[in-house]
Image (cartoon, rainbow, N blue to C red; front, side, top):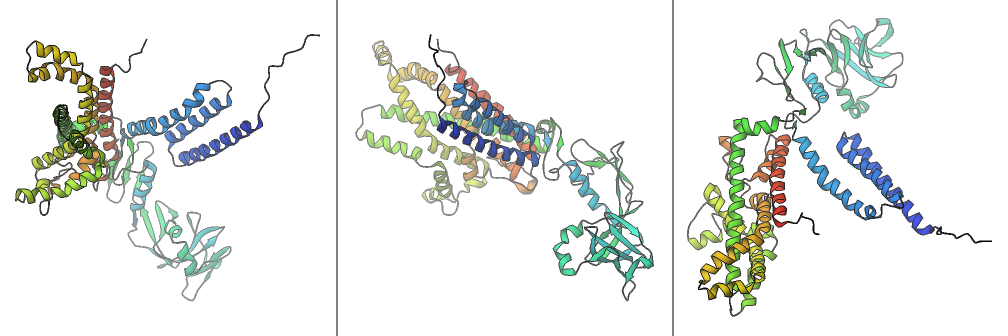
Length: 517
């Protein structure tokens, strides 16, 4: 008889157990994070985590998909730390999300209702005995004028007969069947819950505790019309309407708003405001122009300084190695330390620069001088990098070109201007564009050196003379009394497209994206 060939391989128990443990831990961790995210209303984050969990089980439970087993961790990290923040920022840029418009519409209505409680015309007051009724914090209430007793329970005030309650020597209701009074010490521990008690008496009237032993009859001034969406203030006879931007506004005077507002989805509101609102447009345009100017000037000065030093170091010099090591030192020191040192050096009162000049120049309170300081300090931080790449590029140029040009009678200046420099620009153009993109978002140099100043706060300025887009976005979100997270997100999206476009252009110029055959 022919033997049957056995192709199946024995299952190794160790790797299988390790795989099961790993997948169990992964499912537990991601499952918990998903639960927290969905519980907090962060559906985008929860959805991304759910996709990661599903993809993990599909990839690592399959015998195939071998490449994905290695690529998946990187893809997951890319999705969580790059794609998700970008999508979240784009989403938030479509919301009116600022100080006064930070909560949901339901929460805003609740707070508006809370401010809408006003005493009735007679200022009706009640004696109150706190207790527990049917497992809920409740109260026995006695009208101070008529001495009529009420039971406040489950959000409703019910009138009681005199024969149904126990009265103290002052005629105040202190006992009722099923009602268990609580002392002041116990009531103090329930203060937050007691403050939220409301007992409806009908016709828009409520009894609300004012202390642990007294309550007032209140009228709810605001009434929301479910059909029209209008909010009516019966006390002041004002009708408020939803302006579509996260606030109720006076129907007769839209400039009059009710606060708090809510996060309202208005996809183009922040982007249109950057172009049309004079309060926002003016600072944004100035910051935008300075950001481009700063990045261009910085790259130009760094490249010029780095190339000049590279040319000088290309000549035979004594102690050349020592000079090269000195030139690289600014690049080796952490940038934030260098910036803080330079900050002190330009101090008006005790800075080394003013000591050398014998002057008391206020570098940081003059817009032009402050910009000059930023460019000088950034040049100090960046020229070693350009010196290194320029040195490498010069050494990579074919020596035959210089020899041929010399034979043809070209001077060293002509060789540099007409042969070497065009070749260097062609070689280094992707790095120059990358440096422009980096300095376009150079937060540290501006924030640590000038903090975006000088700025005239008394004149209502919202952006300093040296603010660039990234520091302006930061200040818009966190640096003022009115935080506008939606507008800051819109500015960030604009920065993303600018830097992304420059990066894509750089990649195309360097032909990195072209397939190699």
